[in-house]
Image (cartoon, rainbow, N blue to C red; front, side):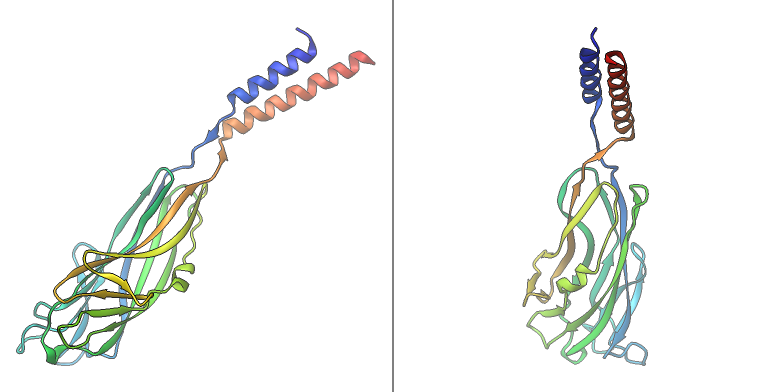
Length: 243
């Protein structure tokens, strides 16, 4: 075989063995809790708001306010719950849930209705895969508007500025288009608010798109390097033969 043909064969063999590596799957967990209640009574003898633990989601994962009883606090109250979510992505995906809140808007008694109070929602997202992946955390300063029944309640503000502060490093992946989606009878209203009718349990999600980037596998890079080295050696040999 001539040197030129051998070079071509080497190059073709190298190209044939090249393949694009698939990014390692994304494996993570989204968790949240609440803190910093304000403008409501969460410590007196007749409380109208509090933060409690839940068995499924852990410590300080539910806010409760109001009551349907005139004699006891927190009988069938309105509740806001931070839901733990697993995150598993193995291929390009859109509208992946990366955080979830569940809100039950109880028809509480008028004397227990709060016109407005505040709470912090603390979101933390961590990744165990791919190797070297880094999550992030963010605190959302929320205000709950609780007018006299029957109008539904309003929670705000969920703005894009807070979402833009979330940043993830996931080798082999890009994450973009973080946005809010409300469902189960609730809705995004007034651009940055979450509205929920009386007697309804609604959900609010933070969603994102995950896209794989082109990542050559280590074997591919090694084979390509060998192919280039072989081609270079053949070129040197040809020059020496000519000289």
